[in-house]
Image (cartoon, rainbow, N blue to C red; front, side, top):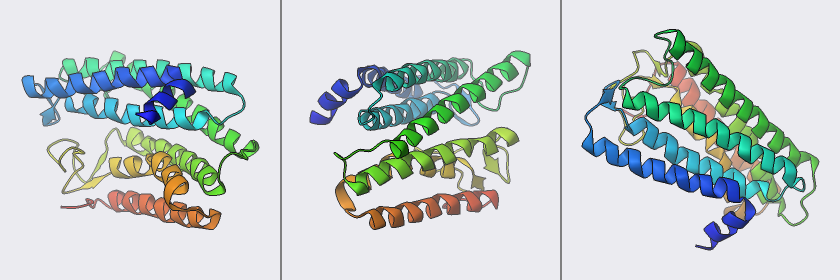
Length: 253
């Protein structure tokens, strides 16, 4: 595919690490079929599978956009820092799955508490670094990009950062479900709760603005006003599902 070829030229570090994550996704998906270890009522390896898959989407998206930045030195630093964070986060998630226990919100003992704190610190630093990358799209000029595409990138990164930090709501509660304990089967694939509020939904929707808004600006919306309207509607959707979750209501039953 031309996209993959161009991506390998734009950011080889994140391109090849993305393939490692794809391998991780395939491996953990396979493990869901051959193991019966469960965490919170579902196969232990399903969570690592989802995290590997979402990591690829994020890594390849931000890699594509950062090619436009004039300061490629900062891009290289960001890329390697992000790889280190993801190696730590994904490695811990897989390790805990292999032990049949949770990686997130786990404060069962001093070691687990320390690892949970380190996870939060690492992902927070990476998110702040991503915010800085987003700011660079405001402080530099990009005459080669259409206005709608550029604003799609700018607003997509900003919404990504905002709803990445929405994860702090889950962290502060040590849970993602509102109205019941975490666990049990939910919506297929995504596993969002069918019966209670689930903070993961807004986290998911908001962070995927990183893909939805630039794609809209590049292919579907050809005006700056249009991309602002779409961005406002998208932010409204993410806020709606957040408020719904905070009120203990599921997205669908």
